[in-house]
Image (cartoon, rainbow over all chains, first blue to last red; front, side):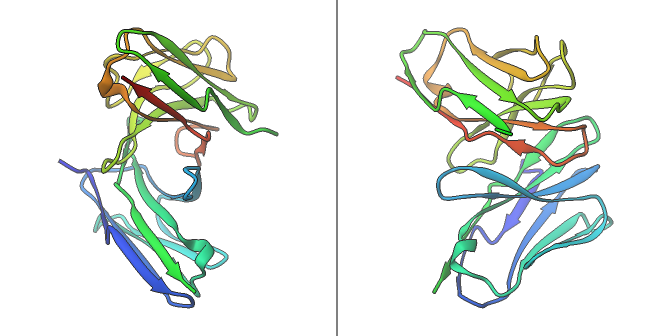
Length: 108
Length: 112
């Protein structure tokens, strides 16, 4: 049973395209995280959300608590955005569940 | 600031051997976590700590032990390594429970 489902699993885009990655979860949460895993393996936190919308540069994250759904958008995508994007949910009891990630490749 | 560091970066063990992975953070964070990442699966929480001297089990704790004797360090021990413990291990820390997590670079462990 996967508490966190991401789609798509793989995504190839042309440079400049608008990208959307989706995350659905099945449990009650206190927060949702979007992470970026670089090709070298390092993991960086992009956003932590408990409601609404956050924006950082070309990245936008939204969450709908009632629908148990979040989206990560990348505007004007660039080859350096190529990475695996991971959705994670923080349960109320300090447990975390992670999606299996969306592998994004942006072609020049 | 070094952030979160992990030692070692790579290790190969034979079945039955023991080892300790060290995680250190210099951000004065209360919460620390150990995860494992396996191909085709999401990160899974092994153990976590909410402060110096405390530890708790995560989703996949069997075969691992942890200790948090100092606030800045979180140790993960494998008493008798098994091939099923071949994985990439990540440590992370956060200021409090619902806060951004900072990840270490990972330790790639192979058990033969």
